[in-house]
Length: 260
Ligand code: PGA
Image (cartoon, rainbow, N blue to C red; front, top):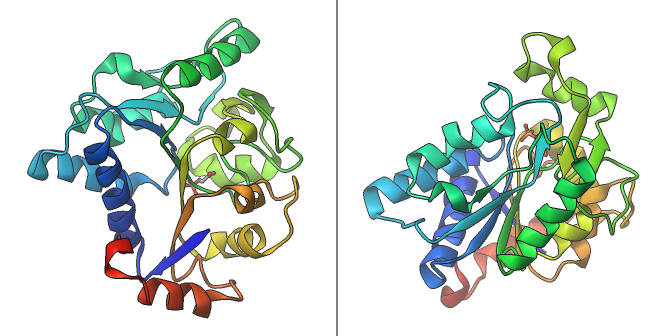
């Protein structure tokens, strides 16, 4: 795992955007796995800027989002479908048919999930998966106790995650308790993973996931088993790491050819 600690979320997102841009420039038909929530907003803003000002071309890119609330139609203000269009897709030249987001209003959830898995395989697999992390260590919406081999399926959110995300809903009764999420096994098959975490409320989960034991009680800890993970943190999210001096040392001593 490459843990990169930056002064601010902006700095971290610029590095993340450069990693994604290089991926797309090297392989124009790249498949990106994308996340929602507050964390990737600055990353998406930077990708939109790169598209507008530097001509970063998304015309052959395919995307798969991690998750969606069950019961929210695509145009619902709190749906992740709407979030993705407002924060990224409306600002870049990705063809609509290349965008995949779990369908929160499907009437066949198991059938939809099986097809989502197959669509990822048919697209050639995910080249880079963007991930945030929950304060309870979830990735996607794979809450603690999720099988580390799980596939795309329905999950029930924990009260803690519901409380963390309540800020997005004016009416707490309108907040769905169920989601469709890519599984941990699905996420682990991505060729590369880019995890982002910002703010002191993520520090405990980041330390446990990066430096603690691998356990389904801390789903993000499974990333220790992935061969190619970049973890981009601001100072606050890195605040509880014991080996932060080493991660900074590695970053400062990178050979030129390996710099981001
Ligand atoms: P956040 O959510 O980016 O809104 O903090 C992260 C997550 O739940 O994975």
